[in-house]
Length: 502
Ligand code: ADP
Ligand code: MG
Image 1 (tube, rainbow, N blue to C red):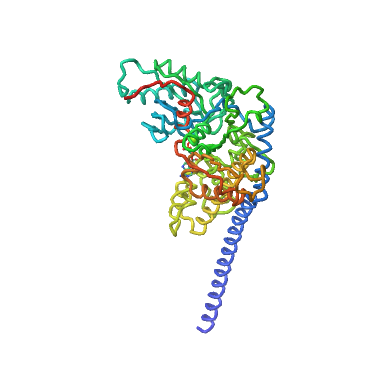
Image 2: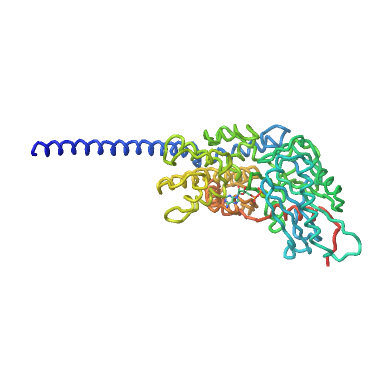
């Protein structure tokens, strides 16, 4: 009996030992995996670093590239396109005008009425719709007929609201968020599609003519009287409300900027034919590139797999279309190299499945258990991850968005530098007398809806400019500014009122 007890005790001890060893091994394995994902996060943080010194290099590089793009055609990755806009709206415009805005994700139709004073601007109707993804890869005919039919429905809803005996001739601004080489205020040819659009055989086509043709086919008496880049629309809207507005930036599906430049600085254009001595330049800054940009392996993969690889490098780091996909790629890498996200989810492997809206929802999740993060991960096929893994995901969102916002701020500071409003040019920084108030209009769903992006951008702009200069720079958010501003620009370019509404 005694021997039996001894044997039993020994056997129990052996079992207990091996269980303990297994637990310790599992814990060690778990710790190794955790260390691995922490390592991936650390690498990401290092690769995305944007210390002030680097931001200042970006500011200089952008100002230099702007200059190069103004000197000669093809002199820079920044196209610095002429817009033929020299006079911006000032509040005195009158009449009723329409705008149709094709963005990267949405199209909008608006009608505005202007009564000759700022305070009498009335946005009478505004419609906003998602662009069906099938349209983005369709044909020119399909795309423009879709836009024309949407406009037709918009107009039909008006009935006879203008109460006119004569048929109404409507004037439309076409706000177009893709690179166009303008030939006049009302015409221009597509240079290339960007963001999610890829309609072949359209480069070189006159965009205003395409829309006009589609409207004519439907028998609509509407004249496409202006072709306006979305940034130029936003600048027009900003200037209408505040004449100190000299630049506009869009942070939406993609990103771009425009600003008011002296015509004598636009060396590549011999005869700019402006009366005001300045012209709005559409930078097409999404294509900015510098070897000093903090690029990661995820950016390189995203670019290689994109429809426009080796193109739009800056946009792919700051545009709303891309931030979600960068975050997705980091999570996927972590899930491939450890099992902290459970079995590899096929959903997570799908490009662009994680939208930037979800990134901001996770980033700004203020529930103690990070329930929003858990919900979004579940949609990606990743369920029941512990809190510490959810915190890791929030950190990834933070790193990717902070980099984007700080680079965006460097872009704005680059424009201010180019036009001598960054305090480094015409005088001593401390001399407040010579610093002029400068307003930058900002538009786009990313900036308007993602608080952390906004806060990081504003903070970086203050850091890079310094407090003395930053206090003279106002960043003004303006919802639907691109669309409304395009209608205002059209109004200011026309002296006669086209529609007399009652
Ligand atoms: P468009 O680019 O068509 O002109 P917007 O300016 O409205 O449209 O921008 C839409 C983009 O803004 C979306 O594709 C998305 O990337 C981004 N966005 C919209 N809402 C949010 C949000 N809540 N958080 C983060 N990004 C957002
Ligand atoms: Mg937009």
